[in-house]
Image (cartoon, rainbow, N blue to C red; front, top):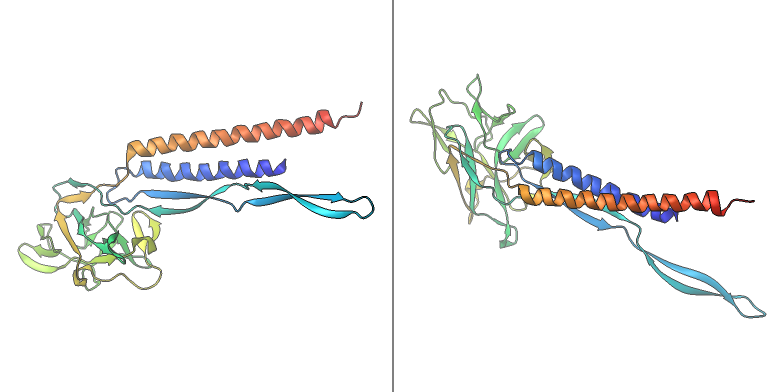
Length: 273
Protein backbone atom coordinates (compact mmCIF):
# COMPACT_ATOMS: atom_id res chain seq x y z
CA UNK A 1 0.00 0.00 0.00
CA UNK A 2 2.72 2.46 0.94
CA UNK A 3 4.51 1.80 -2.36
CA UNK A 4 1.50 3.36 -4.05
CA UNK A 5 1.94 6.53 -2.01
CA UNK A 6 5.59 6.81 -3.08
CA UNK A 7 4.84 6.10 -6.76
CA UNK A 8 2.04 8.67 -6.97
CA UNK A 9 4.07 11.25 -5.03
CA UNK A 10 7.08 10.83 -7.34
CA UNK A 11 4.81 11.44 -10.34
CA UNK A 12 3.47 14.63 -8.75
CA UNK A 13 6.99 15.92 -8.01
CA UNK A 14 8.16 15.18 -11.57
CA UNK A 15 5.19 16.97 -13.13
CA UNK A 16 5.59 19.92 -10.77
CA UNK A 17 9.22 20.35 -11.87
CA UNK A 18 8.20 19.99 -15.51
CA UNK A 19 5.53 22.67 -15.04
CA UNK A 20 8.11 25.02 -13.49
CA UNK A 21 10.42 24.45 -16.48
CA UNK A 22 7.62 25.14 -18.99
CA UNK A 23 6.56 28.24 -17.06
CA UNK A 24 10.11 29.58 -17.25
CA UNK A 25 10.13 28.94 -21.00
CA UNK A 26 6.88 30.84 -21.40
CA UNK A 27 8.14 33.74 -19.27
CA UNK A 28 11.17 34.06 -21.60
CA UNK A 29 9.25 33.77 -24.87
CA UNK A 30 10.20 37.39 -25.70
CA UNK A 31 13.75 37.31 -24.31
CA UNK A 32 16.30 37.77 -27.14
CA UNK A 33 18.51 34.75 -27.69
CA UNK A 34 16.73 32.56 -25.12
CA UNK A 35 16.90 28.83 -25.79
CA UNK A 36 13.98 26.76 -24.62
CA UNK A 37 14.64 24.04 -22.05
CA UNK A 38 13.43 20.52 -22.60
CA UNK A 39 13.04 17.86 -19.92
CA UNK A 40 13.40 14.10 -19.95
CA UNK A 41 11.31 11.95 -17.60
CA UNK A 42 12.68 8.55 -16.61
CA UNK A 43 11.22 5.72 -14.57
CA UNK A 44 12.98 4.39 -11.51
CA UNK A 45 14.22 0.77 -11.86
CA UNK A 46 11.40 -1.75 -11.65
CA UNK A 47 11.18 -4.29 -8.83
CA UNK A 48 10.55 -7.97 -9.57
CA UNK A 49 8.21 -9.38 -6.92
CA UNK A 50 8.15 -13.05 -5.91
CA UNK A 51 6.09 -14.95 -3.36
CA UNK A 52 7.70 -17.45 -1.00
CA UNK A 53 5.68 -20.67 -0.75
CA UNK A 54 6.16 -23.98 1.05
CA UNK A 55 5.27 -27.40 -0.19
CA UNK A 56 5.83 -30.99 0.96
CA UNK A 57 4.14 -32.86 3.76
CA UNK A 58 7.18 -33.91 5.77
CA UNK A 59 9.81 -31.41 4.76
CA UNK A 60 8.85 -27.81 4.22
CA UNK A 61 10.70 -26.99 1.05
CA UNK A 62 10.58 -23.29 0.08
CA UNK A 63 9.65 -22.36 -3.44
CA UNK A 64 9.35 -19.03 -5.21
CA UNK A 65 6.44 -17.96 -7.38
CA UNK A 66 6.95 -14.91 -9.57
CA UNK A 67 4.28 -12.29 -8.98
CA UNK A 68 5.45 -9.74 -11.55
CA UNK A 69 7.24 -6.43 -11.90
CA UNK A 70 6.37 -3.29 -9.95
CA UNK A 71 7.11 0.21 -11.17
CA UNK A 72 8.53 2.42 -8.43
CA UNK A 73 7.81 5.85 -9.87
CA UNK A 74 9.20 8.49 -12.20
CA UNK A 75 11.59 11.42 -11.95
CA UNK A 76 12.78 14.30 -14.14
CA UNK A 77 16.30 13.28 -15.02
CA UNK A 78 17.67 16.42 -16.65
CA UNK A 79 16.91 19.61 -18.52
CA UNK A 80 18.58 20.26 -21.87
CA UNK A 81 18.50 23.57 -23.80
CA UNK A 82 17.35 23.38 -27.40
CA UNK A 83 19.88 25.35 -29.45
CA UNK A 84 17.81 25.55 -32.64
CA UNK A 85 18.20 28.89 -34.41
CA UNK A 86 15.56 31.48 -33.49
CA UNK A 87 14.00 33.97 -35.91
CA UNK A 88 15.68 37.34 -36.42
CA UNK A 89 13.83 40.50 -35.43
CA UNK A 90 14.83 43.88 -36.81
CA UNK A 91 15.30 46.61 -34.20
CA UNK A 92 17.25 49.27 -36.08
CA UNK A 93 19.63 49.77 -33.12
CA UNK A 94 23.26 49.83 -34.19
CA UNK A 95 24.39 47.99 -31.06
CA UNK A 96 21.90 45.14 -31.51
CA UNK A 97 23.52 42.08 -33.08
CA UNK A 98 22.25 38.66 -34.08
CA UNK A 99 24.14 35.49 -34.90
CA UNK A 100 22.82 33.56 -37.89
CA UNK A 101 23.94 29.93 -38.13
CA UNK A 102 24.30 29.04 -41.81
CA UNK A 103 26.27 25.79 -41.62
CA UNK A 104 27.65 24.94 -38.19
CA UNK A 105 28.19 21.18 -37.88
CA UNK A 106 28.97 19.47 -34.59
CA UNK A 107 31.48 16.83 -33.58
CA UNK A 108 29.89 14.15 -35.76
CA UNK A 109 29.82 16.25 -38.92
CA UNK A 110 26.90 17.60 -40.88
CA UNK A 111 24.34 15.35 -39.16
CA UNK A 112 24.92 16.94 -35.74
CA UNK A 113 24.43 20.58 -34.90
CA UNK A 114 26.94 22.93 -33.40
CA UNK A 115 26.38 26.62 -32.78
CA UNK A 116 28.22 29.88 -32.17
CA UNK A 117 28.04 32.35 -29.26
CA UNK A 118 29.07 35.86 -28.34
CA UNK A 119 31.84 35.87 -25.74
CA UNK A 120 31.35 38.15 -22.72
CA UNK A 121 33.29 38.74 -19.52
CA UNK A 122 31.42 37.32 -16.53
CA UNK A 123 32.26 37.81 -12.88
CA UNK A 124 33.99 34.40 -12.75
CA UNK A 125 35.41 34.11 -16.24
CA UNK A 126 34.30 34.04 -19.85
CA UNK A 127 30.64 33.35 -20.49
CA UNK A 128 28.76 32.72 -23.73
CA UNK A 129 25.43 34.07 -24.90
CA UNK A 130 23.19 34.31 -27.94
CA UNK A 131 21.55 37.48 -26.66
CA UNK A 132 22.94 40.29 -28.80
CA UNK A 133 20.91 43.08 -27.21
CA UNK A 134 24.03 45.15 -26.51
CA UNK A 135 24.56 48.77 -25.51
CA UNK A 136 27.43 51.23 -24.99
CA UNK A 137 27.88 52.19 -21.33
CA UNK A 138 29.06 55.52 -19.91
CA UNK A 139 32.72 54.49 -20.23
CA UNK A 140 32.38 53.65 -23.90
CA UNK A 141 32.46 49.86 -23.53
CA UNK A 142 30.15 47.58 -25.47
CA UNK A 143 28.17 45.65 -22.85
CA UNK A 144 25.23 43.32 -22.45
CA UNK A 145 21.95 44.50 -20.92
CA UNK A 146 23.29 43.23 -17.56
CA UNK A 147 26.50 45.26 -17.83
CA UNK A 148 28.92 42.48 -18.84
CA UNK A 149 31.68 43.54 -21.23
CA UNK A 150 31.50 42.09 -24.73
CA UNK A 151 34.89 40.67 -25.77
CA UNK A 152 36.81 40.83 -29.02
CA UNK A 153 38.72 37.99 -30.68
CA UNK A 154 41.68 38.61 -28.35
CA UNK A 155 39.54 38.37 -25.22
CA UNK A 156 39.64 42.11 -24.50
CA UNK A 157 36.67 44.42 -23.79
CA UNK A 158 35.52 46.43 -26.80
CA UNK A 159 35.68 50.20 -26.36
CA UNK A 160 34.35 52.73 -28.84
CA UNK A 161 34.31 56.52 -28.99
CA UNK A 162 30.82 57.05 -30.41
CA UNK A 163 27.64 55.11 -31.02
CA UNK A 164 28.03 55.59 -34.77
CA UNK A 165 29.07 51.97 -35.27
CA UNK A 166 29.22 49.81 -38.35
CA UNK A 167 29.61 46.08 -37.78
CA UNK A 168 29.92 43.86 -40.82
CA UNK A 169 28.95 40.20 -41.22
CA UNK A 170 32.37 39.06 -40.00
CA UNK A 171 32.11 41.05 -36.79
CA UNK A 172 34.58 43.78 -37.76
CA UNK A 173 33.70 46.94 -35.83
CA UNK A 174 34.13 50.38 -37.38
CA UNK A 175 33.66 53.53 -35.31
CA UNK A 176 33.09 56.60 -37.50
CA UNK A 177 34.66 54.64 -40.35
CA UNK A 178 37.78 53.64 -38.37
CA UNK A 179 38.46 49.99 -37.60
CA UNK A 180 38.32 49.22 -33.86
CA UNK A 181 38.44 45.45 -33.42
CA UNK A 182 36.68 42.23 -34.34
CA UNK A 183 33.82 40.91 -32.28
CA UNK A 184 34.57 37.75 -30.31
CA UNK A 185 32.49 34.79 -31.51
CA UNK A 186 33.06 31.30 -30.08
CA UNK A 187 32.23 27.93 -31.63
CA UNK A 188 30.67 25.04 -29.69
CA UNK A 189 30.76 21.73 -31.57
CA UNK A 190 28.72 20.16 -28.77
CA UNK A 191 26.58 22.89 -27.18
CA UNK A 192 25.03 20.34 -24.77
CA UNK A 193 28.37 20.31 -22.93
CA UNK A 194 27.78 23.91 -21.82
CA UNK A 195 26.37 24.64 -18.37
CA UNK A 196 23.42 27.02 -18.22
CA UNK A 197 23.80 29.76 -15.60
CA UNK A 198 20.72 31.93 -16.16
CA UNK A 199 20.22 35.34 -17.79
CA UNK A 200 21.02 33.72 -21.14
CA UNK A 201 24.59 32.87 -20.10
CA UNK A 202 26.46 29.60 -20.53
CA UNK A 203 29.86 28.44 -19.33
CA UNK A 204 32.31 25.69 -20.12
CA UNK A 205 33.59 23.86 -17.05
CA UNK A 206 37.02 23.18 -18.49
CA UNK A 207 38.83 25.65 -20.73
CA UNK A 208 37.22 27.97 -23.26
CA UNK A 209 35.53 27.58 -26.63
CA UNK A 210 37.63 28.15 -29.78
CA UNK A 211 37.45 31.29 -31.87
CA UNK A 212 34.76 30.64 -34.49
CA UNK A 213 36.57 32.73 -37.12
CA UNK A 214 39.51 30.30 -36.99
CA UNK A 215 37.48 27.10 -37.39
CA UNK A 216 37.25 25.64 -40.87
CA UNK A 217 34.09 24.34 -42.53
CA UNK A 218 31.59 26.42 -40.56
CA UNK A 219 29.60 29.33 -41.92
CA UNK A 220 27.76 31.99 -39.96
CA UNK A 221 27.22 35.72 -40.13
CA UNK A 222 26.47 38.64 -37.85
CA UNK A 223 23.45 40.85 -38.54
CA UNK A 224 23.65 44.42 -37.22
CA UNK A 225 20.38 46.04 -36.21
CA UNK A 226 18.75 42.67 -35.45
CA UNK A 227 18.28 40.45 -32.41
CA UNK A 228 17.63 36.74 -32.35
CA UNK A 229 14.22 35.95 -30.92
CA UNK A 230 13.76 33.10 -28.47
CA UNK A 231 12.96 29.72 -30.01
CA UNK A 232 10.09 29.10 -27.58
CA UNK A 233 6.97 27.74 -29.31
CA UNK A 234 4.30 29.43 -27.19
CA UNK A 235 1.40 27.29 -28.47
CA UNK A 236 3.26 24.01 -27.90
CA UNK A 237 4.46 25.17 -24.49
CA UNK A 238 0.90 25.96 -23.40
CA UNK A 239 -0.22 22.52 -24.58
CA UNK A 240 2.61 20.85 -22.66
CA UNK A 241 1.76 22.86 -19.54
CA UNK A 242 -1.85 21.68 -19.65
CA UNK A 243 -0.71 18.08 -20.15
CA UNK A 244 1.67 18.36 -17.19
CA UNK A 245 -1.10 19.85 -15.04
CA UNK A 246 -3.49 17.03 -15.96
CA UNK A 247 -0.83 14.42 -15.20
CA UNK A 248 -0.20 16.06 -11.83
CA UNK A 249 -3.94 16.07 -11.13
CA UNK A 250 -4.22 12.37 -12.05
CA UNK A 251 -1.44 11.42 -9.65
CA UNK A 252 -3.14 13.55 -7.00
CA UNK A 253 -6.39 11.58 -7.47
CA UNK A 254 -4.48 8.31 -7.10
CA UNK A 255 -2.87 9.58 -3.92
CA UNK A 256 -6.26 10.56 -2.51
CA UNK A 257 -7.64 7.12 -3.36
CA UNK A 258 -4.78 5.45 -1.47
CA UNK A 259 -5.42 7.79 1.45
CA UNK A 260 -9.09 6.80 1.60
CA UNK A 261 -8.15 3.12 1.44
CA UNK A 262 -5.72 3.50 4.30
CA UNK A 263 -8.38 5.37 6.29
CA UNK A 264 -10.80 2.46 5.86
CA UNK A 265 -8.13 -0.10 6.72
CA UNK A 266 -7.23 1.67 9.95
CA UNK A 267 -10.57 3.00 11.15
CA UNK A 268 -13.09 0.45 9.82
CA UNK A 269 -11.53 -2.88 8.89
CA UNK A 270 -9.33 -3.00 11.98
CA UNK A 271 -12.05 -1.85 14.40
CA UNK A 272 -12.93 -4.21 17.29
CA UNK A 273 -16.61 -4.21 18.20
